[in-house]
Length: 206
Image 1 (cartoon, rainbow, N blue to C red):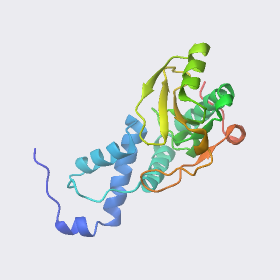
Image 2: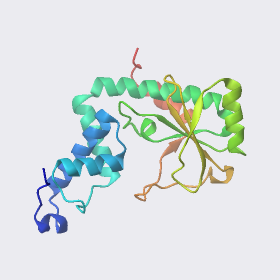
Image 3: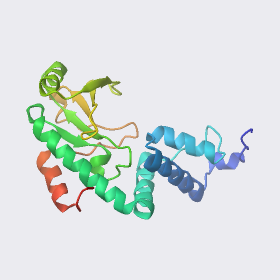
């Protein structure tokens, strides 16, 4: 069925309610289906019958909508999941201490959904050092696709108990404030800060 066209004025002056509805539709796809933000926004726009060039909401708007969705529909589940993921992150950060791990992403900022993975930034002398360490520890992994020129490697742990993405960067970048595609600085935290978050959180899922 062809998509219905929207009036041109919606492209030039999209209403706040329509933009909010799009952000919340994308948030549902993220929270339930585990979609990435960019893909979720595009699919939500398609579902709402909006044209391809409709101005999409920013990630900050979608973050707030994800939090709203969790609070309304998944509160108990999400609170337990977040505590479990942060606990797993602490264990990994302790194990990976030689590589200066920092937690970032949805597990840190509290928007982790059903299919979320732990995002850890590592700053070894060489990406090979991390690979050798994982092999020595018997931790299965495979390579992912770096999305930034600063990233030397992405190692995806094949472990249901520790679903993590290890994002390997050069030591010189440890003190650099990294930004996303939307210009926002990526929040990140070292082990002590994550342990403090965990102490203030409710119990993890059994």
